[in-house]
Amino acid sequence: MAERPIFIPASEKQGYVTRVDFDIPWAGGFAEVQKRKNISALHQAAAGAGYKPLLEISTKSDEVAGRHLSAFHLKVETSYGPLPMENAFQGSKVFQNGGPFTDLYDVEPKVAKRDPRLRESGALVGFIFEGREFPIFPKTVFYDWLYLSALFPHREWLRWRIDGEMSYAGFTDIEFNPSKSINCQAKTCALFVSLMRENRLETYMHSADAFISAMTIHAEKSQTIRDHTKQRRFA
Image 1 (cartoon, rainbow, N blue to C red):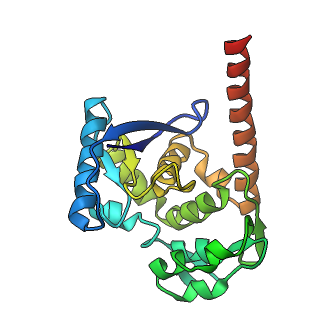
Image 2 (cartoon, rainbow, N blue to C red):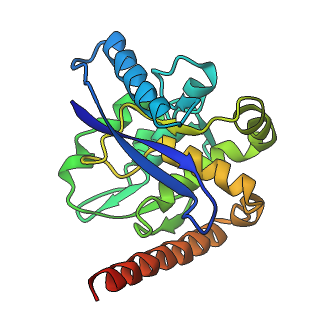
């Protein structure tokens, strides 16, 4: 068995994204057929709780839209030209002892993600992308910015496709293990849908500064709400 999450678009008051975890039978191994078994198990468990349909956001997705929304497939417009989002993310990391490793912009996305320097250069301290520094708080703000920047030019089509015609209840990424990772493309896709529904997308994506400011305020507000809840619970 393994615990894996689904991510559901939510209102601003609800934190934009709701995460729901499910225990599922886990098919081990790296074969694609095993990955698809796990996706099916997660989607079936979620459907039993009323969350359906779901869209898997990864290269293992059964649906073309899900594969195209993968960070390995999405492209971010840069001064280098269109860049795979995964490369932009990995190559922009700054560590205590090195980085950014911009040479990772020019390799295959899987190669960029597995570069040993990303694990051997000390603690992550920030990001530098297109000459601009990005913070590590909120924890996913740079990843979210890149992902939403890649989706933004296609927002009207996505509004029709994933939030209109199909009206997905939520999103999954079977490769994401919350005990080992922080950033998740399924979570950010849910955030994208939420910001569209709340009519905040254009405002927040006006600039990186606007997005970071909005996400920071939101994160601080969310933390305050959780802290107050704990205080009431244990008072």
